Image 1 (spheres, rainbow, N blue to C red):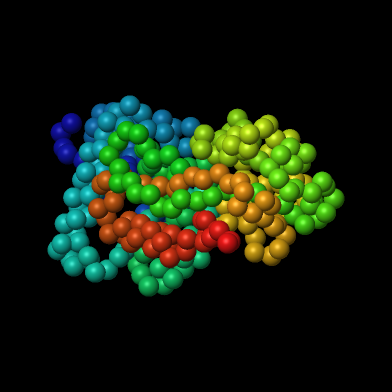
Image 2: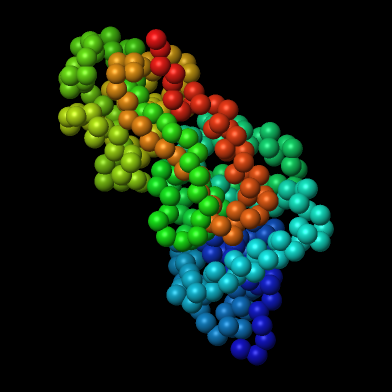
Length: 303
């Protein structure tokens, strides 16, 4: 290698590693996709190494690409910190933040909260990834994410976002047509809607394992939103957190506080990205949202 790579080429490398596609990278950098391809080709030629495996599904980092990734990320953090210090950008939040959150939590809770944040920071943009699984922060699919299981390896900032409880709900139409539920044992006579068991994004999603019996699952789905809709139409009972249940009376709680499964959401970001102010602004929004709205996660017990 006769010359050192340009930072701008490394920036293209980072964005392509995170998005996995030329189109996604071109959108985030506001350039043509051909420009992205050209920059990556030039960087590979300079380094004398293939950084990406190309396929119809997108771009995946090779072993050499993975080796380059932490060095490029360190340069990104240094450049951003220098820009903040020299331009006073610490008082102006700008850039794109990619946030990965569970699907129904993101659509019903996070998306509305982001509106006010983005109105307050016109130079900030958010890519909200609503996923039926948890964001892969190791390959930089997202800058920060809400998940059940924090990474066990790597350098991350991790905090508990909120504990939440999964209560039993049923549609009034379903409950009217089936045996009454007065005690826990009565649940054994009923149908349930649940996650697809061999597609669980986390073992923590096996809430029904705490029922004490094997439930009769009428329908399983990878989407909690779809589960709620099926249950609201009377297909069966469902375990769901308060924030996921439509506030329209189509689902009502069963057995009140006599049974629930409890879990905790964690908020996670790679340490180097957490240093970026635009990431911390979104991080703080989520923490504030959870702190000020505990009833979204746990219903106060009636006396």
